[in-house]
Length: 222
Image (cartoon, rainbow, N blue to C red):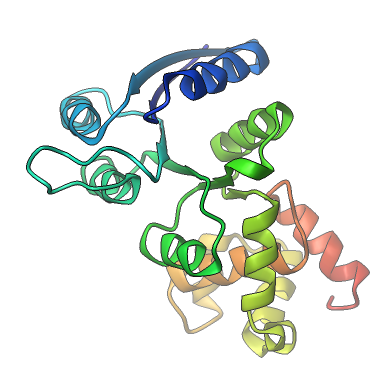
């Protein structure tokens, strides 16, 4: 049995209730979900600090617009996400927001690099359920608006970039991601970033390397 500890932070209790109901109704048989909730930055900070000492959260959902902490140190879900990343580095961070301006999307990806990024206006129950399972297994999971923005901003010359061709070729030969830097002179984190960009460009929605290779082959890059 997989016991999954979750924190959900949103200042609208009915929204949290909706998220909870969807995840509990669609969880897999081998999963037990332990969901804790917070409605402002102070509550969330206390819970993150407490959890980090003994039983860190597996997944944290943060709304961006939240009542700030009393001391003014934490003013948004972005601040909480950065705290969670620092105190619980293995925790998967999911951002949920109404904001869909490209500047805000860009900043969140650059600063937080979340495992899940969902724009509320894109969200259906099915998308939340599917996204949650993908975030657990093979993140990242980005909703439509985020993916469309990323496709526009990632330079199209990434397609013909020699390093990316080499990454695709080596993966197709069965070389594992963690071993790629033995063949390519860039760091593993840089390779991971390029793989993430390639998956966005090739519209790989399930996050799997096999799907990426199939798409790359279909489009003539392998």
